[in-house]
Amino acid sequence: MERIPEPELMLSEEQARAYATADFSAPHQMFVDLFRKHFGPHLTGTVLDLGCGPADISVRFAKAYPQCIIHGLDGSPAMLKYGIKRVAAEGLSQRIKLILGKIPEFSLPSHYYHAVIVNSLLHHLPEPLILWETIKKTARKGAPVLVMDLIRPQDQREAREIVEKYAAGEPDILKRDFYHSLLAAFRPEEVREQLKRAALEHFQIEIVSDRHFIVYGHL
Ligand SMILES: C[S@@+](CC[C@H](N)C(=O)[O-])C[C@H]1O[C@@H](n2cnc3c(N)ncnc32)[C@H](O)[C@@H]1O
Image (tube, rainbow, N blue to C red):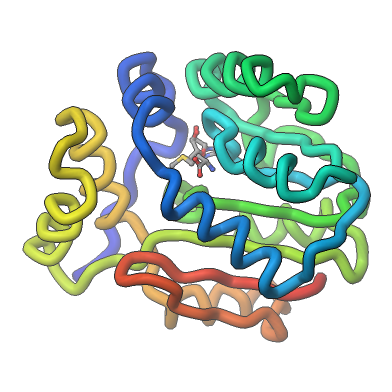
């Protein structure tokens, strides 16, 4: 099945509310645990969370790495509104700064970040190379990088099955977005090609669930 891109930013209030209130604890905790597995339990400095959405991963990461400051960037004001509320409710406003901005237009500091983390942004991008180029531009030399995203299923039937397996009880808008995200996602072999084009061949790709892959490595 060919990739069917979906709208890049998650701009609608209804969409942002459904996403912010859904339970992503299993994949999001897995993301933080995988970072710890590959890069260890100690990290200090400033971490960039690209496409941070309602900041659930920023919050989990800040708790797991108490010496870190997190900068979360997202192009959707609706998503960031939920993120700002969440960060305040967690008492983390001193350590997590959320920034409204869209890559690649938004100007982020060069070679500044001690780590870059990205969950479920790649499949939103019409041009995936933008993600890899942004990581190369913003991360310090040697910084750990972890990207997790969905794997595009073989066909639409398999995509529907995954939605029913993991989101059966969720609102229709979330199920619809999840389905479109699966169709817009990349296959690991396509990501391998992207990494080659971005001169990041040394990054590893690993399939970590029936619907997720990760890319990880030091810049
Ligand atoms: C599926 S959500 C993932 C949110 C968060 N990373 C998480 O795991 O919960 C994807 C987010 O990426 C944002 N996004 C999409 N394209 C973007 C871009 N070019 N620059 C910044 N944010 C973008 C969307 O607005 C949305 O909030």
